[in-house]
Amino acid sequence: MRIDIITVLPEMLTSPLSCSILKRAQDKGLVEINVHNLRDYSTNKHRKVDDYPFGGEAGMVMQIEPIDRAISALKAERQYDEVIFTSPDGERFDQPMANSLSLAENLIILCGHYKGIDYRIREHLITREISVGDYVLTGGELPALAITDAIVRLIPGAIGDEQSALSDSFQDNLLAPPVYSRPAEYNGWRVPDILLSGHQANIDRWRYEQAMERTRRLRPDLLD
Image (cartoon, rainbow, N blue to C red; front, side, top):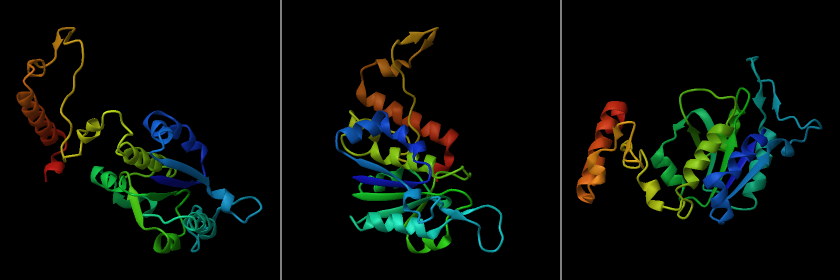
């Protein structure tokens, strides 16, 4: 898989992409993640990529030309499954979407900034708009990182124990059950006896019941 991220703040992405599972997946050759500075595609001598909006609204808008040049340059080299724009008014990102995107070959993620991007980009160049929640962030870099992390950890081989990813919250539309580790007792707080029983069928049943109970209590909308 290849993921190309277009941004005006590449330094926000460098460190997170060089750590943990994302780093190991790149080192193994499972994914190639490239960060592109949008200013490199500006024809302005000051590398400017924004301007005032038509109509007099407050704020600045990311211009169409540098974004078109960046996306066109990438698409001239390969085909992309999706050109994603991170936006508060996009589709809500969830685990099924992460599962689907993890099967892609090539993805572009465009990080928005300022008041937004020239709408013609969304009409003609973007194939999918994704939101990570009903709130506004300074830019699209953090959502791009969240999307990238959620996708990459699903690639076979990215996680040492692949079954771990399959048992995460939301994979089966349920929250994950409680988990415990050693010691079995601490400060008088005991691990549930069922987990120490060695009876796998009963343990699996307990985990499912706990997942259902937590989902009903914390996220009943998932059961709808």
